[in-house]
Length: 290
Image (cartoon, rainbow, N blue to C red; front, side, top):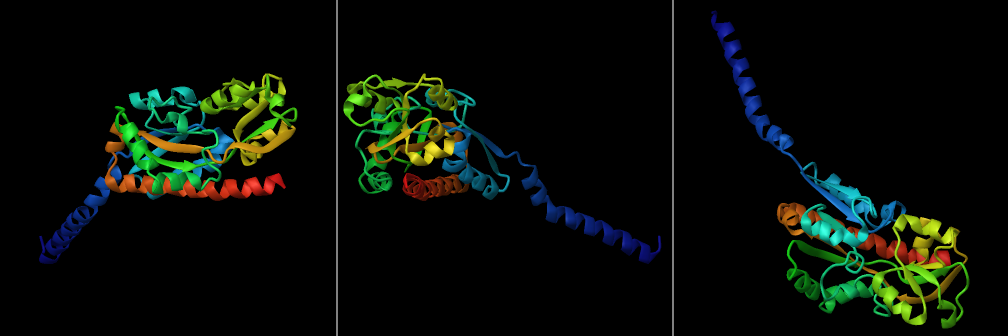
C-alpha cells in the first residue's frame, strides 16, 4: 500500500470513529423510551380545550421527547366518579378534577368543587391555598392515602343556575331536577332541588328531553362554551359559590418515577393552566352576561 493511500485510509477510519464518539450520546438519548402518562380530566372536549389542553400541549413540547402525556376527556377511560380509584390502582397516571367528583376518600373532599358560599371570587382559591394554609392541609390529607399524590389546586368559574324555567324565589327550586356537583347537590336538596348525576356529554340532550330542568355546574362562560346556553332560557345571577376549586393528582409511583426537572416542568404547566383559567373565566363572565 502506498504511503498516501495508507494515510487516506487511516484518516477516514479516524473520522468515522470520531463521528461515532461524538454522536453516541445523542443516539443514546434519542433511543431512550419516553415516559408516558395517561391523564383524564373531568371536562368534556369543548371545555377541555380551555381548562387543560393548552398546558398539556405545552408540556409535551417542552419535555422534548423525554415524556409524553396523553390527554383524555370526561368519562373517556373511566367514569368521573371512579377516577380516584383508577388512579390509585395505576389504571391512569393523573387526574384533573375536584376532590368531590372523583370520590376522593379524604375528609376535606367536600371542600373541593363548589362548597356553598366558600368563596366570592376566583382569586380567593389560590390565596386560601398559598396564604392561609389550605395547601398544607391538602398535602396532609392526601399524605394519609396510599397511592395518590395531590399536586396543585386552582380556581375555575362561579356556580350559577341555568334553567328552562325562571327561578325567582326559593319556592321555584322545589322539584327541579338539576345536574350539579355532589356537595352542591346535597346543599341544594335542602331547598327541594333533586340532584341528578349523568355523564357530562349527556347533559345537553337531557335538558332537551326534559330529563333535566336545569344545570348548576358552572358559570355563564361554560354555558356558552359547551352548548348549555342553547337549551336553557334563564341564567340566575345569584351564585352558590364564587369559584370552583379543582386539583391535579397523580399516581404516586408514576409521579416518583418522573425526574425532578420534568416534575418542575409539569408544575409550571399546571400554573400556566391556573393562570389561563383566571382570565378566561373572568372575561367570559363579564362579557357574556352583558
